[in-house]
Image 1 (cartoon, rainbow, N blue to C red):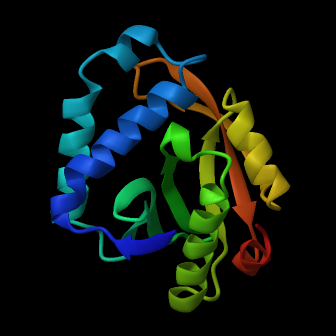
Image 2 (spheres, rainbow, N blue to C red; image 1 turned 135 degrees about the vertical axis):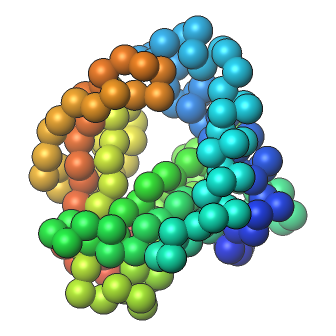
Length: 175
């Protein structure tokens, strides 16, 4: 598995990975009509914008197996004064799950955060109904520091949890 920084030309593959990941991981709690609808165009517009006009502290990392993209993560450095660097997205293609990709992407996120924002922690938001992801983050030392509900992409209000790593270095020691 290798990692590389995303370029604006990667917007279609990131959007496709994002859609496939959502349709697999969120099928049991998001509106099926939304997931089956035209989310490809919406995700493509989203990632095209994010890659062509990035935040100054944004980094998007693509994971590849051979020449094939299998997942990605999007980070916003020192996004929050208390919680630190935001893992804004972390998605793996369904066929790549269970092979260490999520742990490797979190380790890459931690490496970057520690290098560029060493005084900040690392955090992310996870849908409360995404039990597999919640277990994954908890197993890797993430602590739930907040429960809330926010409007989801499907238009419904969805419960979310903020996971936090005060010291992202813990993610470098996990596989």
